[in-house]
Length: 236
Image (tube, rainbow, N blue to C red):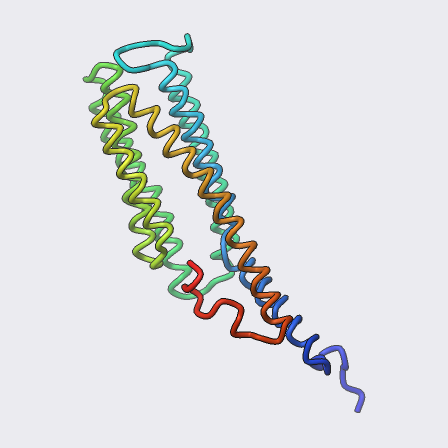
């Protein structure tokens, strides 16, 4: 009778429920990416990068702020690369703990982003030199933002994630609206509604996840496991 009493379950039912709640919250934290670290890097990249495009290459050739012509594109690309690195680290830490189909989906989805943008960049690099600067900038922005929206919708379809799919729809809609408005306006639309929208979405999902964690803990601690929210998708 010299067993390890530390491994025995708690004798108090309330303590057992609290332990279950803590384990559920910790498992959810480890297996779910922190969406704040996903949306905010991309949102800041779009807000600042496309904002500089608008200030330097405004509608009808207007220049709101005298900036070097290379600065907006350089800043946008640098911020996008940084955002990609941050997202890759967050995704790697999350899906690195998952095996099977989910891990393969994450890997293939990441490869789709990399190869998709590499292919698009190769094509645009060949044709953009033949266009005026304002149209070349609109071509680059419109195609890359359109690809971003399509990949978000594809990700939402793969994981049946309504929020990711909705974000892809939103990006596609504002991209079409900005392209219809023309050079200069497109950068403003993507900066404010695209980048700003991602920043707001990041805060929204952070608060939502915290609220879910509190609901799970409160429901199980009160001795009513069913009050933790029902099916996983019911709180989406």
